[in-house]
Length: 403
Image (cartoon, rainbow, N blue to C red; front, side, top):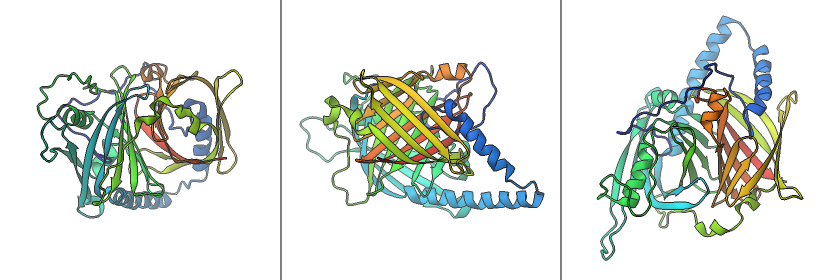
């Protein structure tokens, strides 16, 4: 499973979380709290629906247009992922501590045309070298099931932003990620048990496995961030692939952990202004909301973290504000709205509910977030929204500049 894989391995299929109330809610455009911004998206959807024609011929034309656009989107998605990617895989605990790092390579090619195009990927995992041996490093091979029109829409529930070069994907299991850890840390002699290296493996029945991928705006590089939630809906671990495309990459990029004892929150403090675009899940996903956003993150005079976010729809008809207060302990930020952010090296953070199962039980939508501040003053964010049944319904992309 590289950036576009639909994971099929020997591990069982993840069981969806089941809420006490099975009523679905409308997809929501969110900035930091999905349920708090539901009015914003609902208003945009109502505005959109009043402008839609009820004519059967117009509806048929729209469906044909969506079909052709979905084929184009799939082709652009495949092209975005083609090539040889050299990089590194990082495992972090929920407090942002680096647990393991593994060197990886990914080869991606395609075959077929139009709606029959497929993406083929093979992941290579560098094996740990035995002390005293100087032979060439060995690589374990993991073949990823091909990605095509069927898998990308039904299994992966893709949220794809071709112009922004960003996407989100759903996975059925964590089998590929477990393989990277076993092969890259334990090696081929693994007998299926945890090693003295305190290796922590993903759950065999995760409730959610989500990938958010952001591409660099300056280099042919990308970051793929994985949230893994255990069967109880609690975040289990955070995984990062940092990859650069090209055959001449001699030194694969990696996240330097020298920041481990520094204040990672500093880069995110201040006022951020930008634009948000939200799409429904699936290769046919249309844009359902756009907004200008302003986000402020700062400490008050008592040392408490304050987050204020304002969204204004493109038409200016809907304004939504969110105010959160939080605390920070090492690299973990916890907000009073039941949301947490783990600060990572490299100008990144990953956010998620403190307890997904609690949100589902209370019939509340929730979201997972990944932010990459590639250079000072500019950042990208992806926010994946889930409905009350734990199903991905939309993805939001943010491009923001520090004021």
